[in-house]
Length: 247
Image 1 (cartoon, rainbow, N blue to C red):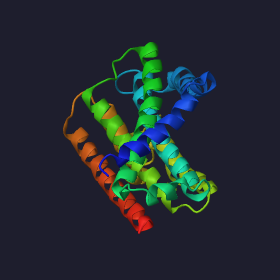
Image 2 (cartoon, helix red, strand yellow):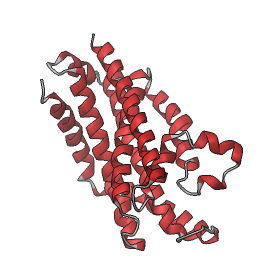
Image 3 (cartoon, rainbow, N blue to C red):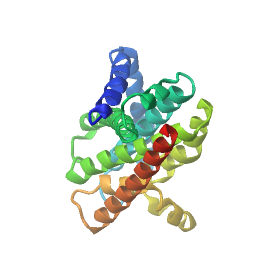
């Protein structure tokens, strides 16, 4: 069914809506960006010297990149694993007249929507703190591609993990290190040279490069190409895993 993806997407959005209407959830979602802004932007950031611009202007796009990664990935990985292992609702999707590609598209789009919502919270806080100077076309491209990339990776994790606790293990080994060492809080150039080559392989590093560009120059185009390549690979792997599961 061509519209099958929308049924998957709508289900996830209705579940998300139940949490969104609770004020406690909204305030808790805003708490982490505020903590990072206070600890790094207003506290530690005062002692960080950059070649150009203020540290707060450097930090805000990085927080958007990190938040879009965390939420796009974790929402999909956790929900998909629970639906498959415990609630068995994923098996209902497979048995329904919905193609594996539609299931994949619905899950990824739901993860993107949640990642974009979390990013929007930081953008609003950032606009109040320092204005909208960080907003640009590369910024928009970076956020959208980043959400798609990590939502696709979340599908892979949610499908291959046998226990719900394993999703946290994958996050601790892959997502959390990227959040702190991919140029979110400090320039990659400030890291030891023997770590920079590895850090530059990570997808979030290229998101942080692209998201801080005022216009799409050669470096930005290279980073966009890397992100699109990662996205295509993760999407293809996720599609293959779901297709084999449905057989």
